[in-house]
Length: 144
Image (cartoon, rainbow, N blue to C red; front, side):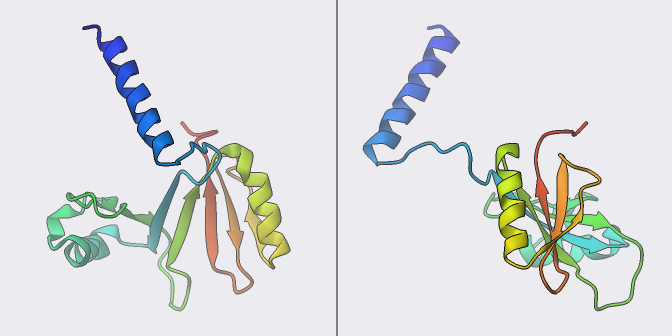
């Protein structure tokens, strides 16, 4: 059997099962949520988080903790300058279709937030809550 035909049949079957369950595709929703930890030394903190989250420090790959069981999304480490605490250390990277970003920014600002940076838009826009805690609204647009 032709692989394309077989793939189309599988996709059609999945769509039918989803419809039977009352599920509807909604491509204009959040596509992924990542948690980033700001650190000036990935090698120092990465193995600790890998050990805590997965039970094995070897599940750190120089940039992120990877869960071999697939139970959680990666915790990744963003390099920052060394700094005194307190300073925000964790932040969310919220991946959205680009069409949703303007409305999310508008809603966040209306809820008391501020736009911190659009320097990397449309790849990502940085927002902050009223206390200065940041979130990045990320898209696949404008990335290498």
